[in-house]
Image: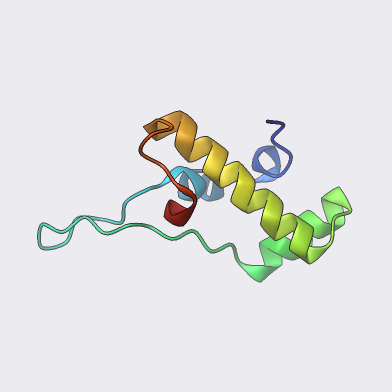
Length: 81
């Protein structure tokens, strides 16, 4: 898969996209949901020329791809993104 939006992100945003679990609090591992800020969406719209829906879909697909690479294809499903 060709990564379009991921190389354009800052380092904290890249870490957030690859994160799978929230911090352990009281011994619980809770899933992490990545929700990009609207100003990031606007910047990526300007840089790539995509619409808002296309940028959100591209980020979703890239996050799914990166999580599958990091954690293995059998562990990650579309509901984890």
